[in-house]
Image 1: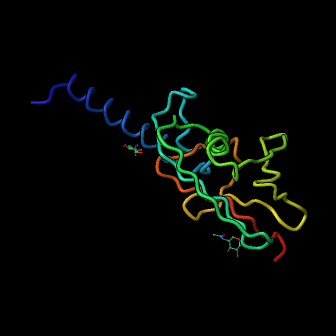
Image 2 (image 1 turned 120 degrees about the vertical axis):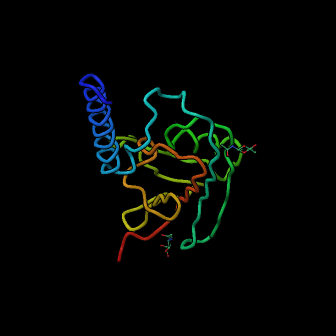
Image 3 (image 1 turned 180 degrees about the vertical axis):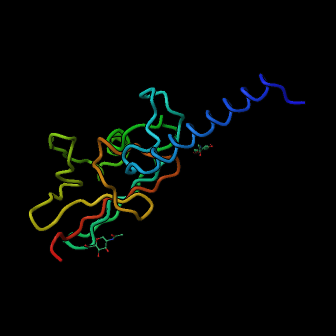
Length: 150
Ligand SMILES: *[C@@H]1O[C@H](CO)[C@@H](O)[C@H](O)[C@H]1NC(C)=O
Ligand SMILES: *[C@@H]1O[C@H](CO)[C@@H](O)[C@H](O)[C@H]1NC(C)=O
């Protein structure tokens, strides 16, 4: 029933599936910063993201939230810029750290040797900074002012 050419097609199909799976799993093994990066720059689909800046350790304490909706999937820094335009508490300063931008301050609160703006996506600390992390649909990004001393 299944002739020689049919077998070849079947083998090609299996090989293609195998390669696709291998690529997918190698993609998954990379850190969150390289995962799901749109190949086409800013043509990613429009997504909704919630940004929260939280300071629970230095007076005056604050927590501000910004919903950034229907923005093309792209790096986190762009979402932070939009948040700063809609909520003045999100005004921030970044510095060029060579491999990308580093958050220096949010809402006038600067990082120091002992404290930093840690970034979490759905409670998981980011392995990279605002210019390398590609924000995902329905992400809740928390900028948590935290002590670096343990
Ligand atoms: C984003 O939120 C808007 C409402 O503000 C909603 O209409 C839209 O479906 C949401 N998009 C996604 C991708 O969740
Ligand atoms: C946020 O920072 C505070 C102060 O360092 C810390 O107690 C808290 O555990 C942090 N939250 C998360 C989710 O890491």
